[in-house]
Image (cartoon, rainbow, N blue to C red):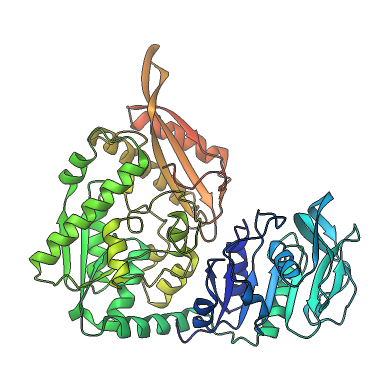
Length: 519
């Protein structure tokens, strides 16, 4: 990433932090989220052109421990949002108060300094999105008020001599009118190059891989999905086919005829040194009696590594061979990876929370070209690398496969049932022209059975849940509003063609509070 100038975002736990990163990237500037507990030295090693302090749920009535306050003395442009503004105020000897009047939701911004650099082209009295209770009541001596809210509270501040600014509202959310203009104006203060695009990212990653791997070799686990395909292609572009080995493992947890299709696609994409391993019996045996989703993921991840090690031995590859993975930014976040202290584990990802991978990562032997980017950015890179359209548009599929779409114990019978349901589902949404519009669609098999009636006879069968979501990056998602006539046709086909299923339901939960996958 050395070629890309960047904005660092210190994440204090705001629900909108990812949105800040996305907004900055949409302006063709690379942004990276880091720990709020990053040391001054580590921060300076990033050579940021600007720093954004995110909001967060904490109150500063008690001092925030672990934050390197000397960061706030830098001459680098800094933008504090909500908690970030309060943090700047407190450090520079201003005063905060736990206000009796909460400001949640929309408020009108009253600009005191319309000529201020942050408000260029902003226009007057726009609605902004507030979400705070602690309030700045008096400013440090070197700061001034540049905007207030409906309640007369301080809504925006600016240092009198340094490019340091604070906002008590969220410019990154769509509810804030012209919020993008504020962020754009901040970027102008940073004098940062607008060089974040697909081609520059590819060049930066190829250069990084060359310097990282040097004369060593790389082995890549290729599922056939877009993430692992892109990461492997970047390694191939950097190192050439002789130094990159690709292994596809049929876990037996794949969709209908999937492994055969994957191998065919990989060959068409020019993958050489391609190894196919049928380990379906091993995975099914391993999962016998396992019901807990975290244990499923961990066991599957461990067996992946065992097979990988067997392959390394069979190819006479040394222990210092690099491992290439398709890990995304979102994978690291959901896995509570130690990117920042206090990161919560939402769910393990088989390619992240694994002792073998962590040991390899510690030794610098993991190559993750996608670790800085979101799913939609991976799709853009895939298109730039001329990947086939069916790969670029393919819906995300979890590494543990159907094992985490069967709630409870995984059996061969349940896998066959789910494959049939899933195939019908994807067929129908494709026929309806919805596949490309939906970010992800899949079926889930529930462990409970439900009563039904067939031919005047009482019967029991499994419950199949259909899930379809609209999203941009997988960090947030809303359920897809599929027409009732299509859902009705799906239900009829599934219960008629899959005799073991007696009931079909449609999941209408957004993310958050739910995750996209059920396990």
